[in-house]
Length: 144
Image (cartoon, rainbow, N blue to C red; front, side, top):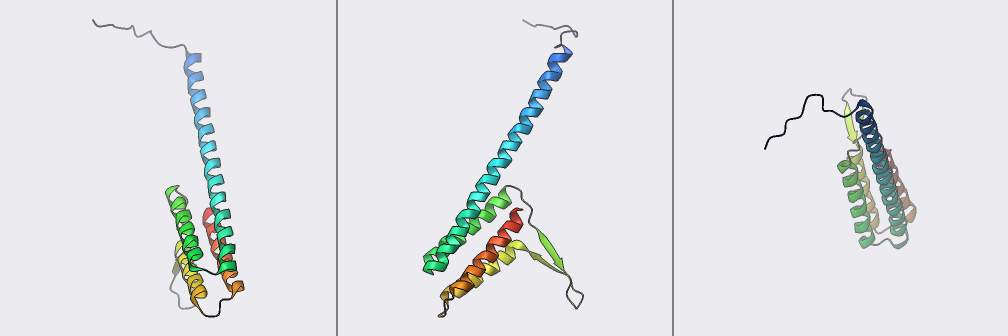
């Protein structure tokens, strides 16, 4: 059995426009909640990374360093997965060649320097704290 509707069978205009307005505001509200959840999650990750950096300076153990590196890697993966931009800086040294430094490469270099500082015989806690603060600053630059 076929039911045919007349072309005049539509919803009144006030019902149609009201439904569209509600969906837009709901979508905006949903996006705002998702952004705030992401911000809270990333703030929590940064706080945990900072605490783990302090723990490294106190204990100077390789297991804490491994946990720290995993936390930083997870934070970077989260940034990339959520579509945050990878900031790139262009530097022009004296010889005219432009050089691009990405923050992720710089974070990796700082992590390697931190590992070297922990493995060296002269374990300087101030140097280790400085390196963890530099890494945290780079992560904040990427996040902001």
